[in-house]
Image (cartoon, rainbow, N blue to C red; front, side, top):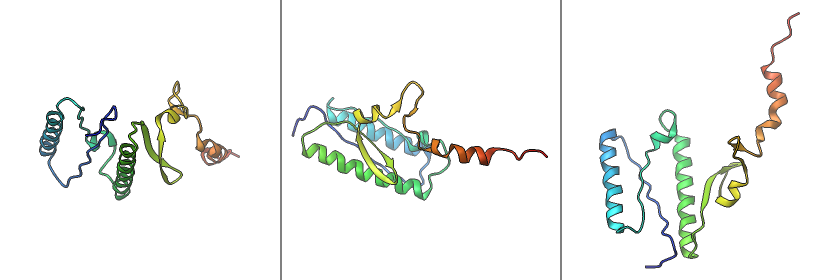
Length: 139
């Protein structure tokens, strides 16, 4: 076993139509198994997509995006392990391309006091928004 200061890993599970209680039991069993098998070497946490999604059922676009992000994440993790590195990164889509950025770089891109990005691309559309949202002057 290679020790690199931290163990990185992830488990992605996709399921079909399963009742919430059955999915919870399966997920709980998986988390418990990982915790026990690790003998204290790593934590196991669970997250259910529906709890973070804030919307209806995932669309085909959501599922394809999730698959793309998962594939890039696994490639990045594999590369990190191959280089014996333990960098921390954030993955997302920017201008239609999947991007993985260092967490240190991402911290500098946000206005944390106001909880928004420093560069707000949509501000360029403000004049158009003003025109489209204004009412016609009464004559």
